[in-house]
Amino acid sequence: MSMTTETTTLHHWIGGRPDAGAGERFGEVTESATGEVVARVPFATTDDVDRAVRVAAEAAVAWGRASLGQRSRVMFAFREQVRSRADELARIATREHGKVLSDAAGEVHRGLEVIEFACGLPHLLKGEISGQVSNGIDSYSLRQPLGVVAGITPFNFPVMVPLWMAPMALACGNAFVLKPSEQDPSASLLMAEMLAEAGLPEGVFTVLNGDKEAVDALLVHPEVKAVSFVGSTPVAKHVYETGTVHGKRVQALGGAKNHAIVLPDADLGLAADGLVSAGYGSAGQRCMAVSVAVAVGAIADPLIEQLQERIDKLVVGDGTDAGSEMGPLVSKAHLARVRGYVDAGESEGATLVADGRGLEVEGRPGGHWIGPTLFDDVKPGMSIYDEEIFGPVLCVVRADSYDDAIRLTNASPYGNGAAIFTNDGGAARQFEQEVTAGMVGINVPIPVPMAYHSFGGWKDSLFGDLHVHGPDGVRFYTRGKVVTRRWADPAARGVNLGFPVNE
Ligand code: NAD
Image (tube, rainbow, N blue to C red; front, side, top):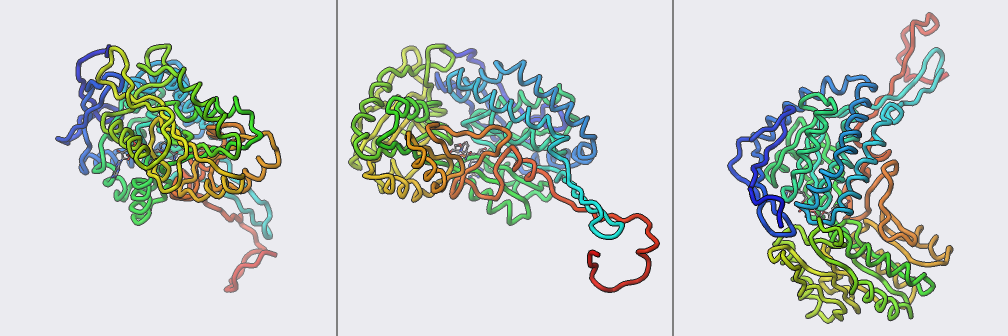
């Protein structure tokens, strides 16, 4: 049963308050477990974007000059808001995305950890000083805010991904403009209220709802100095290319096809648990999901058997039911796409071991359901191998040796996460050194870095130089300045047209 059948009309958040915007286009937000439309979301026009960015630019001046103490107190208060209302945020994510409540609670927690990291901003923004670099001269570095920075986020983590960006950008003294996914935008609006409650000055945090029109307007706006993007690879590439051509620094995180290699000596039970958890958690709608298991040598047959056993026991259902382990997909359109891949995998000659297409969930006929699906004998060249499915579809590829497995893994155009299951420390170390991915797991299938490290992939999984949050987040949202200082020094007087030499 849905919480309500009423359709609410959402808003933007500009200048510290709800704002209807001038647009006439709206999107529909559905409850994924029932398929019901629960909200209409306004799509910002280019004029809405311009107005909001100007408000943010004005607010950015005072916020950038606010003391570190003032800024960190807002972060601490925001942390309390998110902590005390974590359940509310998780419920919103479950409703609009579909993921089960425990999973949604996990994403809120991971977001909270970034806020906690950002609370240490006085320490993070410290510069360095070199005394007496020349006679009577000291040199020191500062990191200063950029002004207005924008974040564009995907549907699959409606709480965590905005929180990868906003706390870091705000702590560094910028105004942050968020364009959340139009498929599940409500969590962002609640976080805007929380930031206001936490004492963030008006205009420093903005939510602009919308689609390509809003994104493209942000990418060319002269007052937007930096853009963080997380989403699919084609859009990440577009955001990176357009943003950089317009003089902005851009970090654009794209899609993934994460491989997990299972060596013959691996702990079979641990590997099977890990692959099922990482393949089907959040119905495969995670950029760190494992979508390809590379089974090396004789472990393939027992691995398939153990995967099948676990898949048979998985409970798929409404994310708000305590017993559900896997929820629905985010939309009907995405369901059709994922089903299409399963059809293609069958006709391309892969062996369909578990087929989720027939799944029905009692009392929820309109939900976007597909059950856990497992393919064996998958090969490069099949669309289920080559393309990102972003659903509960795990593909097993058989390889003869570690060398074959790593060659295959590194030939993928994506390089977000990669994992290995083995009890051989030497093999694990070789993998860690050789694999061309940004986040590596050793007997850990979803190696998501902690908030105090940075998150990001390689190759087509990230366009740009810096990863998100952690130390890279501080670098991304600030620019460096180095001061060379001398106070009145009689010995330094006199005209000298030569290039300064340090004596
Ligand atoms: P998406 O690329 O469709 O959308 C992401 C954002 O871009 C949304 O805010 C959307 O409104 C906007 N957008 C969509 N099409 C656009 C266009 N043509 N021009 C300008 N803006 C556009 O991604 P999604 O479906 O919301 O999210 C799933 C994707 O995100 C998957 O590919 C997944 O791997 C990826 N993802 C990557 C990471 C990572 O860290 N690398 C994390 C989460 C999700």
